[in-house]
Image 1 (spheres, one colour):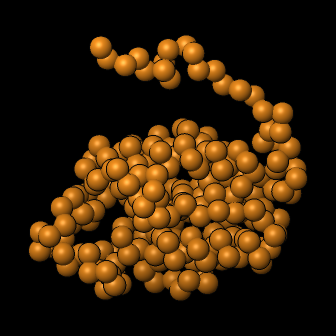
Image 2: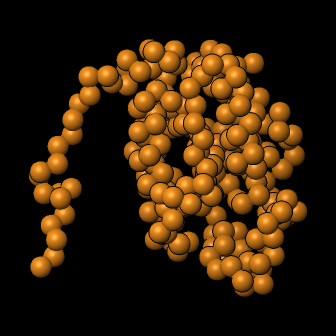
Image 3: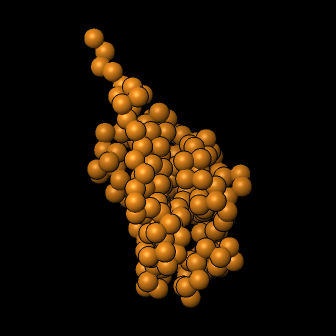
Amino acid sequence: MKEQNQTNSGNIKWHNLTIDRDKLEKMRGHKGMVIWFTGLSGSGKSTLANALNEVLHLDGLSTYVLDGDNIRHGLCKDLGFSDEDREENIRRIGEVANLFMNAGIITITAFVSPFISDRNKVRKIIGSQDFIEVYCAADIKVCEKRDTKGLYKKARLGEIKDFTGISSPYEAPENPEIVVDTGSLDLNESVQQIINYLKQENLITKAK
């Protein structure tokens, strides 16, 4: 007999917490949000996410980075890189990021997240007003030159299947909040571009 899906059984109910998002944001002194970095492998997502995290943290803001490789060591270690597994990987991250955001944390994510539909699903989970998509727009030739792991070489040799940009497509964002030319801008310039956006949108008041 097939086990009943408890999530849809009617036995699971949402519990409203007494210490809610509003109270946590007031305590932290800023709103929670999700800054979602997307781009090809080697486009600078993780480097830029961590650099932004350092700047915001040093200014006393509550932040956390969810990184693609790190997540696949734990939460998503059961998933591969098929289209279906990539979709589930991003769905899980979206749900986790939403929990962090509702705790009043500036949640910074760094995932290839190659498909527009998957990123749009996360935007729906988070809410467009709290979801900031940052496209790390580096040409694939630049990404290959930066490839210290040799992943692109292995992919071109057929040693890695379903590798984004080589044997699996990457769908660039159509209307991201921020486009950072990580192929030509240096790290400080890239961070400052994001900081400027956050200030212009009145999402933060600190950070140099």
